[in-house]
Image (cartoon, rainbow, N blue to C red; front, side, top):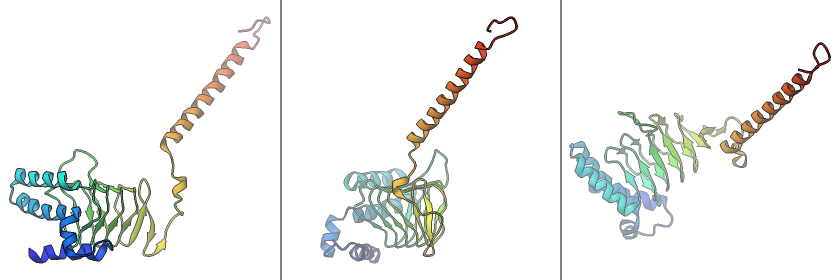
Length: 223
């Protein structure tokens, strides 16, 4: 147990250049406090002390701003940097040497039971605001860009960005078209354009119908 606690502290010192010493890390890093609280809550959860486990996790959430369900499984050397707004669901599994930044959600997509949260591999970095939603695997050595929304499996050694998330680099080689973040689709604008197109088509049909009604019939009269 004490070896694990020491490893958690060393992980922060290795990953955060702002961390000056162990004492500062122990007293001021909310991500560390959330992880330590989770280890206690998770141990109780496995022993079916569900209510007490949830009380501990929710108390930790109140003080740290980080919500980790006591049923979630986390590996060694998890580093939650800043951490405010991080949510990790009940059936989520996180490997070793994972870095999670503020605002990240590892969640589900509905009310289904059973395994419904993602499995995160080893050596994964999940940047600020990213959402990984659903029961699928994110492979080892993956980078997920800020504010990305990942909804399907990600192969190892990949970089994912965008909404929805897509792989733009695999094994160090860029794949697919280059993603220009200044040209991301706006669903509201696209919907308005589609409505405008439909209105224009209806106007044309209406004018054609009016012209058809004005056409002369036998006897020189119009319809």
